[in-house]
Length: 350
Ligand code: MRU
Image (cartoon, rainbow, N blue to C red; front, side, top):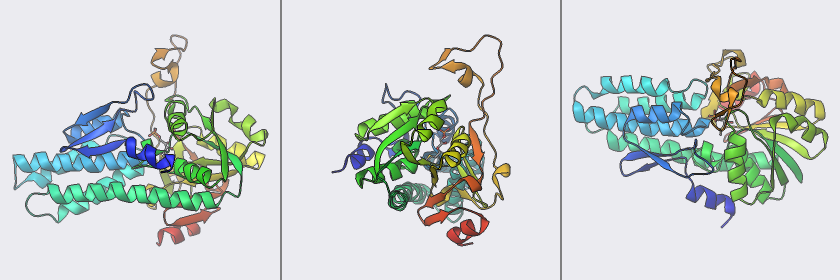
């Protein structure tokens, strides 16, 4: 069995076990593998807000299971009026993080499902949450094939943040393409940005790549342009938290500067995301809400304050890459090359 499948079988960011949501606590990785056992929607919302689970598709999946917990509790309290009470829980889940549209997409889908239910809502809602989870895994594998096929290679690639099994239902978006591309001999090695300040690259992507025996080199974010200049990478491959109708891409802070540097150096730039990440209601990147987290994350490293006392820190955790800097957007429905409004609409079928 290929190593890529083994990782997915042993490590799951989110799972439904014995009537509760289990979240692999990503704040502790790679040193400690511990699952949080969450029995309420409020606990799931806190797990998303505090980044025990992170990555756009994984956040959506966690929220979907959170709706099951909400419905179970509210139906037990009041079998007649549970729907109104669940609406408040949906708002708590929706407020957990603002940028990844997968959260709102999953909540809307669960909301549509619960609207038509009679009697105990739990079995149907759990089925729907499981479908969201399984569809995401299937989308990852399809994107892996489509994205890998774009890479003539063999070449090295550079990636940013974590887009693997930890960020999705399993396998990964950009990391899924990397897994598939490596298995097909198109990708020879991976340069992984450490991804300050939360270190998703150093802690999570490096962990997944080492686990899968894919040759990986960790670099400081500020070394990326030098790696591109060296000729060691043919592609930058990243995920996304929200793609606007014109093809602008919100992703982890630092993605935009990678796209600028990639264009300058003639390195291709690929964005890999399921259609649950595409928000056709948002006309362009300027309208995507960008989360700002505590400045302390920038002023600290590994929980230790490193910055000079008294200095201010600004911590926007996503940025927007203009569509014109993107060579290809890969979704489970197909590839949009040189994305623009028409190409996005055609791919989304709207
Ligand atoms: O703040 P995070 O860790 O949730 O940010 C994650 C990213 O930016 C990922 O690149 C994105 O969600 C795509 S993951 C498949």
